[in-house]
Amino acid sequence: MLTARKRIRKAVFPVAGLGTRFLPATKAMPKEMLTVVDRPVIQHVVDEARAAGIEHFVFVTGRNKGVIEDHFDVAFELDQTLAARRKTKELEALARELPPAGCTSFTRQQTPLGLGHAVWCARDIVGDEPFALLLPDMLHHGPTPCLAGMMAAYQEAGGNHIAVSPVPEDQTHLYGIVDVENRTANVSPINGMIEKPKQGSAPSNLHITGRYILQPEIFDLLARQERGASGEIQLTDAMIAMLGHDDQPFYAVRFDGTIYDCGSKLGYLAANVAYALERDDLGSALRAELKKLL
Ligand code: G1P
Image (tube, protein in one colour):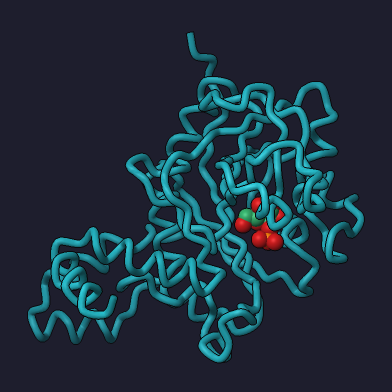
């Protein structure tokens, strides 16, 4: 029998990063607003959270990110113009995607002190309840949305959950890596973690993919966290500290779809092609164009 769990209502999206890898595209535009086909990257990730039942969307932003707030608001003049032109389909699509009033919050990470610090900036908005955390660079593409699968695992076991997936051994130094009890199980207790291990020293090839369900106790640990790898306050270090507490189990939930790292040019381009190939209105025409090019 399932024990009643505290509901996961809120999701945090850290969107303060400068996006230097995409300059000059990101000089005046947030990297999260770059489009994968015709939706901004951040919209794809918010869609994933909504599909998992998230009700409140918390964005940790920074300077020059105001357009993200506009994107999740009503665009009054646009709606008026679309209505006057009888563009009902477009109007309905915009309305469908709009988060309900009062269901978005924005706070700023004033100093770029790392992912752990960005998450900590959301502490007052999240409050004393478990929450989801989604890193917008990482698009998770598969038959079951990643966070929805994690929610099911959370209902079963409670505690903290981290999505993982295997990477080639020569890439483990680029990610957080987990050590699990059972490497082939869909859900397995985590024994240890390490952020960006030196090459050859990773405890497994399972990397942290950027989707988390965390208990609110993480905020106290983040508040006390010293700077770690790259001089930044690392979320993984705070999670390692929490793993040491008897009442804070961590589980790795394997994601079996494809992950596109839209923080890298190659990942971003691949995501565009993959998502477009699946579309009824674009797939076959794009396939023909690609054949010409290759
Ligand atoms: C962050 C996390 C890391 C995780 C990665 C996924 O690293 O610290 O554990 O594997 O996201 O993208 P970053 O990409 O910010 O260096």
